Length: 330
Image 1 (cartoon, rainbow, N blue to C red):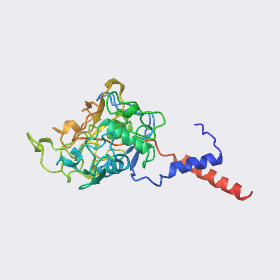
Image 2: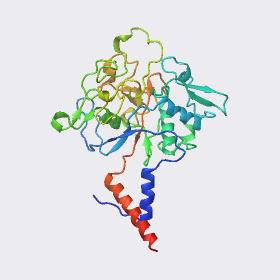
Image 3: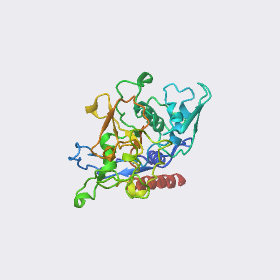
Image 4: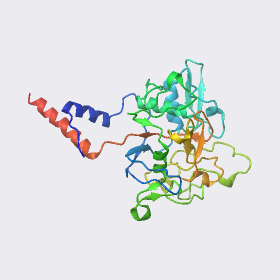
């Protein structure tokens, strides 16, 4: 592999970008790396999951607390309808209330902010990624990872921009992080049916390894009363994917990025608390919807560029030290 050569000053800048976070950032995302670049697709479930490059994906679904921070930063007027009143009134998922009037809207978390946000359209999620890409704070919601022309909130959702640092995972990226395991099939690599490193999903009990937040046959004809979301990661390490993600089975369906075959629609994966049965949580189940859809069972998680390799960080650090030494001798 050819390593490009940079000046000491450029390397120092790159090191700063790699290792620092803007001082005004209020949302911190816990990412896990998805390695094993060049893995084969899952030929038993629609040929999904092949990813030719390394990337990282959020360990957890985007939470109510994080989305409330976003709203308070960019939605004092809420020009793009980023807040859905059901976020505060639907008893099954309520978690954010809005007060004051347009121009001075304020958003507060009710209950546990560690539960996943719902009632977000694909466009809402894209604006959140733009905000994250642009450093949070007063960062733009209209450009960055996605270009939303003229305040777009409907129609054909745009493709991810080249150079995006944060985005909604493609269906292949999402699928791989959930179901792929390089140790499977005698270390030849393969896919599990469920995102808990297993081919079964039989329980929603916290006490059962591999369980998830879904209700299956526990209710017939009506949703349960009260808040049904669980804190992200509540089911523990025994329910994680190989890469260490939580809740890619159950809790809420999650938006995916562009898949050309879907046209203007977007895919949703992972099942939700309101799934009809455990098959909705499986790799074989794929839900497609309009990107304007806002639902009690739909949220999202983020993907991002991989961390610099240990070797690159060593080179960066060494270059910075060498530059400092040279300056000290002048």
